[in-house]
Length: 453
Ligand SMILES: Cc1cc2nc3c(=O)[nH]c(=O)nc-3n(C[C@H](O)[C@H](O)[C@H](O)COP(=O)(O)OP(=O)(O)OC[C@H]3O[C@@H](n4cnc5c(N)ncnc54)[C@H](O)[C@@H]3O)c2cc1C
Image 1 (tube, rainbow, N blue to C red):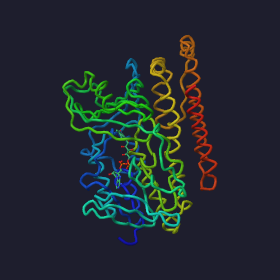
Image 2 (image 1 turned 90 degrees about the vertical axis):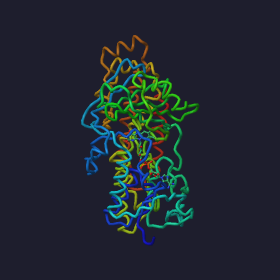
Image 3 (image 1 turned 30 degrees about the vertical axis):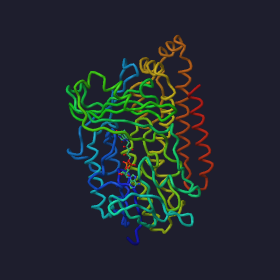
Image 4 (image 1 turned 45 degrees about the vertical axis):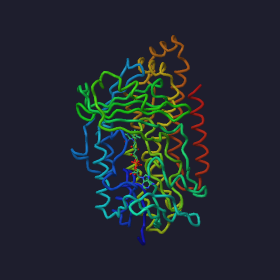
């Protein structure tokens, strides 16, 4: 195909949103996915999304057949399950999606906007010439033939495996790899229950290092007798098999007696701040490929759609000005960081804190209300965290010789504030980027050291 403006690789929530928005802005767009069209949208996921994302993106709310149920909030359990908070609020009101139908809707909307969809087309690598990404090579899975596609701009939205990003050359100055400590490997099942859920409108989450080192397990309702149940662990040295952990510690709970599996599978999710830069000459990165996921709960459907729409807005302006250089595309970095990336960065600090706290500390923290429902709600909304440490709790913790826990909580709150301020000064052009990137690295090194002391 000749004269393409944009090639979007990957028709997940990020890629479909980017392709649709770019076509709506008048660009000639093609969207490639390795799956058959009828399989697009099938994804191992928790399927939860806040309603606020639809409002913010100007998307119509999912229809009744695109949702499994409506959720009013989250019940968070302490590791010993002795304490739990129900965290509710407008920002936590949302849906458990029928992920497949929702994915199909997004592709249909992209095609309806004029996007050319090439399904069963597996992107192999970027075509890089004179320091610019000029297109991609791909395998047509229907014929087995290798094809070359060229455009002014390529968007990598191939999800966690980031097929294009991983093969970029150093001169494009985009991180090509993500540290395993910032990745969760998950196993999840959709299960039919024999008994109804007690609270069918609340998602359940339990953080427990004994069972889910560096991660958590979840039970999300999909109606009264169906659940999405899964478990994720950080991919640090010696991490356990998440499926074995799920069966041993969660499926063994009384709720699952007599339950049956509808489907199951494993996948990965990045849980860090977004890539420091998501653009290079002729290339933009969107969704999981750009680490656009909430580092605490792993929610990436909403952020990938935010990333996709913002990338398309910048792409349209850049192509109109005939400037798809790194500089011409920089505005996407700035707009994403302002809209969601700075919140992610603060939450990465909070993730480090949670990962470094022992189960005993988490039990104390929740039992003595060091971390209240209010704190969790504010944190989930990206506001600065302030731990509610009452005089009574302080005395109690001193008596229990938990001074280091108090110190760590304070350090985390301070570093989160520092990160927020730092990200507010994200460079508006590539000029001061190197300095900013060095400073970012230093802050996160400090977080890793201070929160372990
Ligand atoms: C177990 C688990 C639970 C999760 N729970 C939630 C949750 O409850 N809520 C939430 O918001 N998020 C959740 N997430 C995260 C969420 O699923 C992702 O952040 C989101 O789907 C990212 O969308 P994406 O478009 O970037 O990538 P993807 O949805 O992964 O889409 C990538 C697309 O690219 C295609 N592709 C891949 N490689 C190629 C290639 N070489 N050539 C062509 N096409 C290719 C794929 O077929 C796919 O269609 C969860 C993730 C996991 C793993």
